[in-house]
Image (spheres, rainbow, N blue to C red):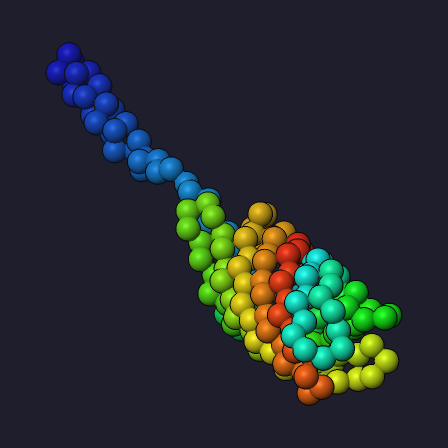
Length: 173
């Protein structure tokens, strides 16, 4: 009888280990990208414009822009800027084609970018413009909020060429 009881206890002990389950592994939350594949952005910025020739003087200003990235790397945008280089201010409106290269380095989210522009500039008379530039965006809150600095050179049909520096904030949706 003791052999049967001993065998029964040993069998239950071995069966208990067989049903113990799998090893529990630590679950890691998937990392959210800093820059989405498609995103809408709203820019608010201050600017300094250095004019070269023509009837304008250098001036401080600012503006607003809207960008849409239809891939992670390519987007389009439109922006408006006004600076105090003329009697009533100089208004600039541009369309943009933007190429960026997002870098997610540890916890740091950076995106250097280049762009080409085309648009109009006016202070009573309207002039066509085209330009090129580049910048760097730092995402303070991934996928939501960033700061940027950029520079561009703009050629004008009326010889009112200018170089412009912008610093601003970017809201991402």
